[in-house]
Length: 118
Image (cartoon, rainbow, N blue to C red):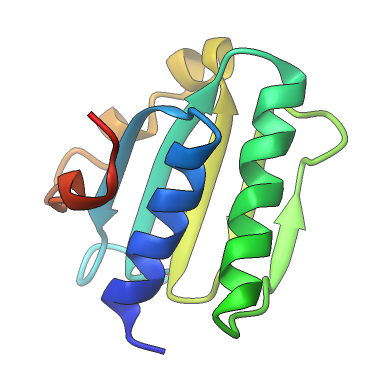
């Protein structure tokens, strides 16, 4: 599976469930954990769970198995581990609190506009 295709699949899946403020950070050379972080949020517990489920389902359709899914029941910060890509699906308030974009401010932002509905 080409990494860029997997990244765009995860972003599109999040967008399909109306995730807000989707950001993809290129973590190559910055983090040993993954090559990309995708960060987004939903406005309710149900929406946060729906976003994570859609990412899992769409990636499964292209043959990628989720390595780890954490935080699903609490629905405040769900981590979807796709291997080289880790998706962070936050509840709006939690995203503001943890502010991963600032924490990883050195990471270049990837252009994902081609798959996000305008």
